[in-house]
Amino acid sequence: TPFETLILERHGQVMLIRLNRPEALNALNSTVLTELIAVLSACQTDPEVRAVVLTGSEKAFAAGADVKEMQALDFTTIYRQDFLAGWSEVAGFRKPIIAAVSGFALGGGAELAMMCDFIIASPTAKFGQPEITLGIIPGMGGTQRLIRAVGKAKAMDLCLTGRMMDAEEAERAGLVARIVQPEKLLEEALAAAGKIASFSQPAVLMAKEAISSAAEQTLAEGLRFERRLFQSLFATEDQKEGMAAFIEKRKPAFKDR
Ligand code: HXC
Image (cartoon, rainbow, N blue to C red; front, side, top):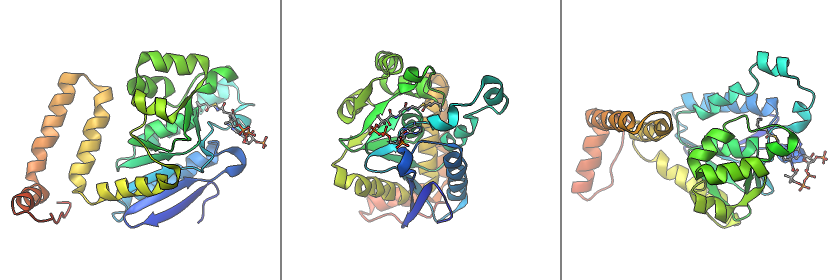
């Protein structure tokens, strides 16, 4: 692998991306960002990649932005370079991306997990926004995505106290989609991604786009957008194939057309 901070593994049509800075609990420095953007951009254009799983180590998904890298920064520098703006490219990835979280997902690590489409967690997962303990606040979406995932009460609690939330609390609150046993974490995330990869890609992309748009518009606009996407899928061969296969009691053969 040509990357310093990532390990890539192809599993059929799924790309597994492992954050790999064990010496820093996968803290997110500028190299991680640059490499992650490069990999996702390649996944975006590679027709053989139909879904992505993003994971860390057993001990940490990612323990935050790299404090050692941030320490010396000053306001005018980070304002002029629009520090952290690059992460919007990760959030804008169009294919499905699942976060498989074990251990710490703190600060920027929690924010990165929330940029993914959904989170599958090991019981060891710990989520938190400890920025307040460093004299700062979340800067990669923590105050915005967390409130949408768990509501105001827990978002305030986590961001103001800096405490961690375990996997069970996170699942109860709606941040985590599923909790699976540690030894099954990757297997289940890869299986979910593989399942998604087997469906008609236009339908998959539109489902993601419609759900992702919900946070950005009113309910009326969102419903209209969903309905238009839904209607447009009736222009595809895959809609005909999917429905014919159901009625003929056979497996569909999707062609992404
Ligand atoms: C840089 C980090 C790091 C981080 C851990 N390390 N987190 N380095 N940035 N965010 C390093 C430690 O310095 C240490 O290096 C090594 O990883 C192992 O960590 P330990 O602390 O020894 O491990 P442990 O005692 O198990 O404690 C785990 C931990 C703790 C509770 C997760 O590491 C921790 O509190 N980390 C910081 C969490 C945090 O504040 N994250 C938010 C960052 S701000 P050495 O060299 O000493 O062995 C943020 C802003 C986001 O994310 C918004 C915009 C970016």
